[in-house]
Image (cartoon, rainbow, N blue to C red; front, side):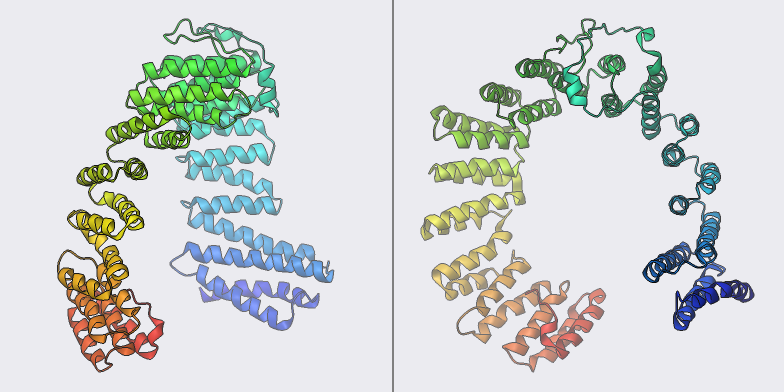
Length: 605
């Protein structure tokens, strides 16, 4: 191995001499470059090959080539360009080939080599390499896609690209990626991309056709694209994929007949899919071509109208038919999402748009198919309208109750309901609802209790005490509430009341946060009582000393700053003995750092 490396390094000497002669690099830089290249040569010649060594070597050569170019530009050096630059590029080429040969299963090397060849304008190498890559990675549709894209974009060879895609689809007849590529290729091969599809859509003729359109009605120029589509439709049973193909056709002019065929197939095969109905309704809104559907169970008209009101009405009719046939929450969600988009632009027909949205929300609510997101939107609208519309207040109460009944595990909806009761001055009703929902939501009801406590604190101390007493009786949230309770006690009744409460609760049903809070409250007192301030640290060690190294470190830090430094050794010994063995080494390391510099360790307590 050493002889081979030395031979490779000797072969580089003429290039180094030329670099020095034309003053690209000085002698020290040449020596450094040679040393680095020798190190990389030894690495790639090891018995056990590593991908990282090749990647780093190639990257180093790439950086070297960039540096040479920069120095040529800076100093105006033009000599020996073909010798030096070509030699480095050729070496990178050989490194890539060697890496690909040794790590054929790693697609990254193949792709990186293609980019390199593109950079050095050596496309002929790629054409040969693509064949090898597809032999090795024929089971990866992405590789056939890469090969087709290269032929199409770099070589401008549509026939080769088509052959790659056809071969790829023969091996992967269910590849959505390859079908889309082939479909685009056939459309692009005979049609210019439509740069202003929206404007052209308004001017399209109203071409009504029956669902059973004869194949011969398609122009010859669309036949190949239609064949690709038919195969895709038969092999891939996915409404989203078919919709994607339909969206591709919208990018091209004069594809109305092909669109109609795709839509007819969607209606026949996917009438049970919410996304199919959503697509049909949105096409009505856009004024796009629609087939006549008299032969199907869908009773709706061709949307050839140009007026916005007519298009919105037709769109709404499709959705109304859809929610009767596909009775799912997804269908209602797509319907209302579309109406919300329509309502974003209130420049025209504002009342008409609001009415449609309001009606759809009420219908979905009645059908118990309205989702959390749309309930929250509706509630927000009703809250905004309640001050100027008396009926909105009554409707708000109804919607809030219905929403929480329909989605009983939604914290956001319960939050909206309880907040509304509190703002309306109905504290008793809010407390009753909160008590019941705690049993349903369990620990997830904590944000609701925090909201109730905050409202009570703003109102009065007596009200807050009453709410805290209720919260402390709820086993689902008592642990999380206790730290807040301690802080409230200090603010309203003083540190002695907090100490008494802490002493009564520190041994059972607590969290580390509870002890941390008490330690913090003791530390902010005007005069720190070492006796009382030490207690939270002692209790934290007793309750959490086996699994939390921070409680020991914080206790040590406290003794160093406020207590008795003589206790540090004893605490350290207890920590080493009491901690989980997996944490002992980490604790000792942190303790050493703390002993050297007390402020260097962040304490959690």
